[in-house]
Amino acid sequence: MQVNLAVVYAWTNELDLAFATLSSVAKVPWGIFYGHLKRDPYWEPLRHDPRYEKLLAELALRD
Image 1 (tube, rainbow, N blue to C red):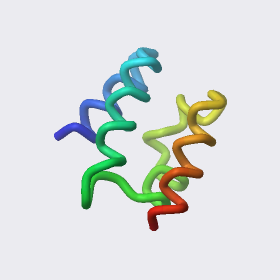
Image 2 (cartoon, rainbow, N blue to C red):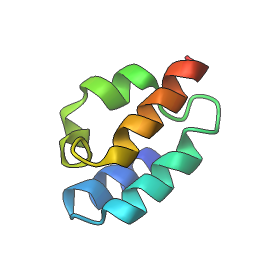
Image 3 (cartoon, rainbow, N blue to C red):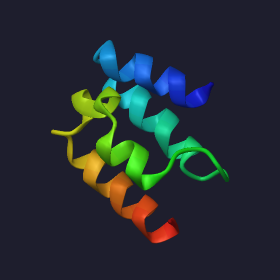
């Protein structure tokens, strides 16, 4: 459910809330994966933010 909430935040231009939610989801097992964040069109609103690349790098290390 947290991932879906982050999608809603991303698509409603609440980027700070989206990244805060994704940061917590990225720390739990089976929360979100690198490929999902990298390829899924749901995350398009986040892709121009520098925090997106930072989160991808953290997930790449974990996956």
